[in-house]
Length: 284
Image (cartoon, rainbow, N blue to C red; front, side, top):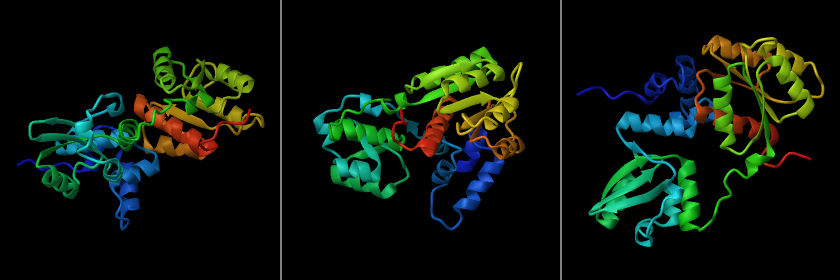
């Protein structure tokens, strides 16, 4: 029987984290009782979707998404009350004969699975999802709360600076789905000009570009009192710990390695805006 891979090994294979990040997370985890995935989230190096995908791969579960958009019968929802759904982070997906398919954040919660199986007389098949998916599904289907998708994100203006048209377009497409007001530039010189004119809330910039590279643009931003407060996330094809350390020491708010993972990009963008500005709309 093949040895089951550890959670951290799967994240490394999927290039979600590197060896240095894994070792730092393991050090932070020691003696805390926290899950490794929780530590990675707190470090800001993985998203909840990364964790769900790795967990599913590690133990052979299926993943589910967009639960809130689906339709569920009252009979199915009655198999689990809203308090249990939120406390245990689970949601009933469908019932086929004597089998109940259950969305779970932690599909290894054997006690919860056994209790529900005994109570309902059903065989439980766990599927992996994220806390956000469960929250949205419970809000809509149990609590009848209609969430305003992306409404808060329309507060924020994000400037994307990248010399590669395809890369820049992909970044803009991922952020557009989140409702941000978007600006763009193809080099550091134009990016600096846009930043001075429009004063965005966040700048996402490549480090290697024509005319003025990302490093020069960042130094110019830091030297200007009108815009030096704007956080800048660096994009770099040099996916090394040394490169990340250098950029963070320079004063960049965060670092994202290329090729860009859209889920990670959106998560880091939201993280930066929340940390710098909080959850309230920016002042007019």
